[in-house]
Each structure stands twice: as structure tokens, then as C-alpha cells.
Length: 424
Image (cartoon, rainbow, N blue to C red; front, top):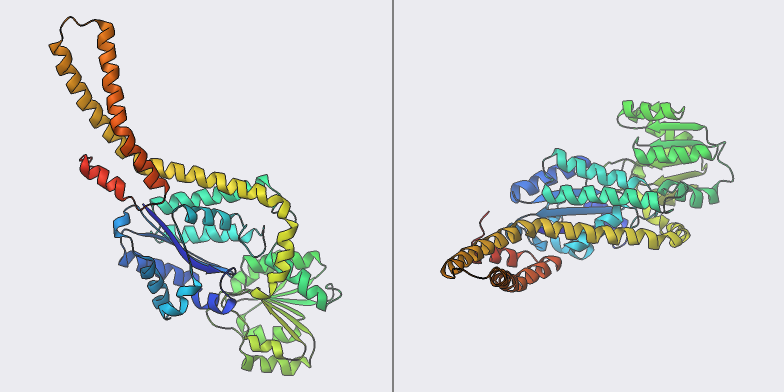
């Protein structure tokens, strides 16, 4: 069996790198289908958020599994990049480390904002997409379902998620509050109608904002979100007029290119007359051209600008950190133990059955020759045969257990099957 993950996140790659490697939902689905075509025996799940892009792959048959370089090459070719340009920007995890990492991610312990709830939803969506595309399988089903269970345990058994914690809440609280003294008189524009937009609306409503506008390419989705907050929904053609009237803009689309270039913003700037505008660009790739931040009166922040503020959020939850890590570690050990058992259990069972059949045959042959044998002596002979078989089997089974627990590719298990002819 083989578990593998390559990817990048806010820990090891800046926003410029992450936006080059990001997947839209449609791109993720297409990439997984291409992987299945290239490697029919491999399972895959792609998790792509504003802070990370991670490609999880797995296979029961480790002999036909692609190499790390193969998967990096695929990732580069899909995004029309050179492999050497991204090789140093992607991290690799294998075996047990993949499990521990995914559990940590799903529990939001690896998030920029520790304790934010959105990542679990994103993990679920990634897994569901892989399942719908028939790209998930035995191993990915197991590890992603376990990750969801671990995230719920961390949420229920620790205070990591205490109060509302999210990227928008940290961004608005840290940056927008330094620009505006009050929010109840501000006009807020949300671009995009996903979960991040809704979370932002929730937070700003608590700050007293009541003038909300939502612009989305899909007007129906914008209207559904607007109804929840007594906001106004506008079609995409109204983006420029809404940018002109807004005081605060939160952009969270899944566009693959900037939705507002520097040149396009000139029209907006000319109509605002240097009125202060706070723009929080939470999209990856970014929705607003970074050069827009140089315009007079424009305060443009991207996801990577939150690092320092998020560190304060992390420290505020340090007391709960050991509890959460303990849950992740225990669940990782439990999962790997179960995985090893499922991998080796059938083979061990067949090996013991084969050894027991040979033992019984030899015992019958011996006891038939020893007529009128004392029952105590017969029992001692049978126990001696049992001990002999157990002692012979112990070293290979112990080596097999060590081999699997070390995250080895299962070569010893295959060898054991061939040596003892333990066919499936």
C-alpha cells in the first residue's frame, strides 16, 4: 500500500507560487480524471484553498505507483509550468506522515487562522468531488473519513474553535479596524457568494454594518446569499458601479485570472475622488491586481498580509494546542494500526492456516504410529508442535509488522505471499 501527498501552503510558499498551483473545482476534477487515466490503479484527491494546494494519492498496489518526480511533473504540466520551477516549492509526505498531516489540516491546526471552521468543509468538498468523479478508493475513503472524524473530535473536545475565528474576522478586526473607527455607516461589497463571503457578512453584521451588496457571476447564488442578510444582489455587469460606492470590499471568487486589473481600476478610481477604500482580497489566484494597492486612498490586503495577525490568534490558543495534538496523534496511531492490520491480516491468516494444516497432518501421522499413547504425553507432543510452529512463524511475522509500520512499500508482504504461495 502507498499513501503520498505533495503540495504547498502558506507555510512554505508565498501567494505568487500558490496562485500558480491552485485548482478551480473544474480543474481539480479534470486533473483527477487525467491522473486516473495515466495511473489506473491510483486513487487521488485534490484539496485547493486560498492557503494550500495539496494532491493526495494512494494505491493498494504499491508496485505500480508513480514516483514523486512523476507527480510533480504532472502538476507542472497541468499548470503549464516547468517542473524545476516548482520542485523546491512543494512538500512531500508519505505513509503515516500523510495521515498525520491530513488530520492536522482537517482539524484546522495547520490553518493560517487556527480554529477556523471553513477548512473542514473544504476537505469534505474535495473528498466528495473525488468520490463523485470515481477517483477516490479504499485508502482515500478510509483516510478522509477518519480525518473528518478527527476534526470533529478536536472541535468537541478542545476550545481551539472558541468564539468565531475565521480569516475574514482576523483581517477585518486587525486591518480594517485600523482604517475605520466605525462600521455601522460603511457600505460593504462582497464579491463571490461562497462560504467565505457568508462568513464575512456574519462578522461584519455583528460590527453593525447594515448596507451590504453582493456581486457574483451567478446572480441566483448572489440572491440566495443576499436574502440571508437583507442585502442587495447585483449581476456581474454592476461590479464597477458597486466598487465606486463601496467603503469595504471583500473578494472571494474562484476566478483563475484577476477580475479587476490595474487598468480596469482606473475607471473606478476616477469616480471615487480619492475616497478611502479597504479591499480584502482573499482569493487564490488573487482577484485584484496588486498594483491597485498603490492608488491613493486604496488599502489593498491579500491573504499573505494576515500572517502577523494570525500569529496572535495562534498564540491565543496555545493552551488548547497540546490537547488537540494529542487527539491527532492518538487517531493517527489508531488509523495506521488498523491500516496495517487490514493490509497484513488476510495474509497472516492464510499463513497460519497453512502452517496449522501441515502441523495437523504431521501430528496425525505421528500419533497413528504411537498407539496406546498416554493422554498427558499426547498433549505434550501437541503443545510442542504448536510451540515449534509459533517459533518458526514469529520472526517473519514480526519482520512483516515492522516493515508495514515503517511505511515501507510492502515488498516483504509480497515476498511472503510468493515464498509461501499464499495466493489471494
